[in-house]
Image 1 (cartoon, rainbow, N blue to C red):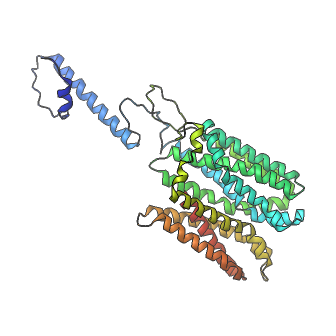
Image 2: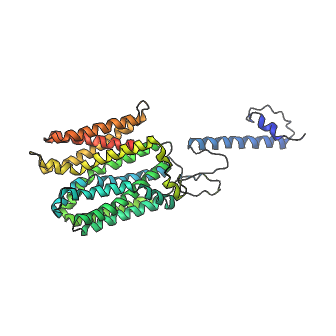
Image 3: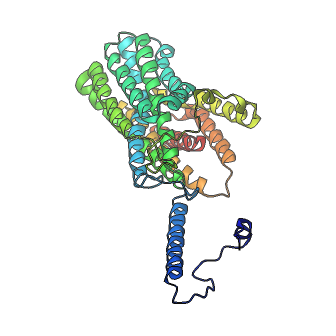
Length: 399
């Protein structure tokens, strides 16, 4: 009788071990066929279960690179590298308030002109997103991060020759800011492509550990500047930034499924060509536009305050320079606490992320408005704690 494939498709698939098949023991070929089929079925089921456990099941013909799967193995090396890179970027950017009084004294220019150094650095770092996205789609996270760390280090080393604020705006602001932008976005892409099921955990670890640089760098800056002067500090800072090249080389491409019997690591990026990095269709979504406007206003009025924490505290009577210099450390520790609080809150589905972010931004704005009345050291510490917690939660909510 001819075999019809439609009959096999229409019938439910019953495991061979449970099927009622009667064979004569005198037919060894038939027994061997049934035994081989049962072994093949069991092996296929085990492979299917393993693939489902790793979150990457997509068919029996696809193969996986052993030892290079997402959420495990080398993915945690990526997490460690991103933690170290975030310590460099977050630590220096949030410690510029230590250098602000030094720049005022060194170059003797106005406060408005001196604040341009930190403003340009932060602005270039955040506004470089479209350019860095284009570079990521062409060259991958490893090369982009390596190059960004080298550019950031070059900007710091060149700053040792600075004779004016304008020089620092170009070297520390433009060069180091763009290098930090490359490092920051490459880090986020690496974590998102190497982690799927454990992505929230990995993002939380990298953010919290990276925030530790906010209270490491203030002491590091103070010690290096006192021992080696401003020029020596920038040279050593450049050497510290070069460590980002080492950690950037660890950001190898994440594994993807392939029908190739010998799978290779390829870059997983939703933007397969450069033009998709500049897709403006998303701007037609009014909710996205409101989110952009909210983030812009929050960044405009919140983060520049960090530049004046130390210098403003020194103007209040009764506060010593040592007490004022300790406030950035308080902000850093509170920032880490805010990031941890945000991660715990996001795990609870009872809270609305948009509402929580709006509440924290309102608290941050109120704290800044009332900070002009914080004339004692105790109230300055209270303001620094509130400022740090709001900043930390907003950074996590922006993800």
